[in-house]
Length: 298
Image (cartoon, rainbow, N blue to C red; front, side, top):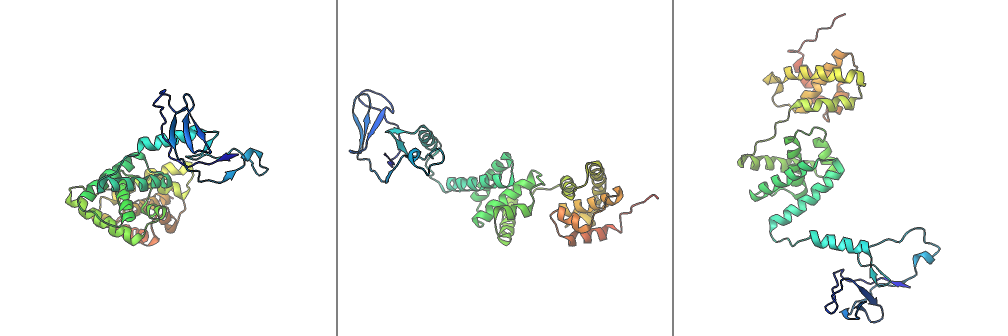
């Protein structure tokens, strides 16, 4: 029979013969004994688990036995458990200051976000450093929303268009109104620290919008090229550009580019591809109708 003994996994070095981890476990006495010289290295180990039959002998057994820290078979610590324990011991250290605790917490949050949203590693590091500066300056927005706001700020600063505001909010499960408040507070403190708000070039949204629309490869490059030229003209007009989101400007440029290239799309489809609503796109197209003229040759 095999019993599960629960105790802290540690290095056993015999003070008599000097051997390391050459041990056996006495199940009856609850002792760890050196195999070479018989010295008792540890006494009073508690057997907290029930008796179990070897899984190989059970008809219900259908695969290899699992492993976890603290499992012992035949008096030897499993190698995989020892590796886990040493790794945890190596990378763990006491956290003393509030800032260190906050850093550990936001790193855990951002690592989860990186797996969910596919965020590059350099943006994670940038977000951590930015949050530490903001925290030291008094940034105290709600925990999850403040982490998400810092991440979104870094995404915009690095020009990552594929991960939109909608993806951040929905993917990380944060409250939208609390996120907006946290982001506004972040911008306020960042301004006091001299950290300039990220300026997003609307052009970075064009490839994503065209790709989401599902335009064929033959027309995709043409639409993108025309959209970039149209967008350059749109952003040169302050009264049209000011106060509008970059993705809305890009959506309008793509809509006109599709029309010129002979690709049929609706305003609703373009707005959805830009992670926007139809209203802002329609309003922008209406304003552009007074300043933008498309010549069609028949």
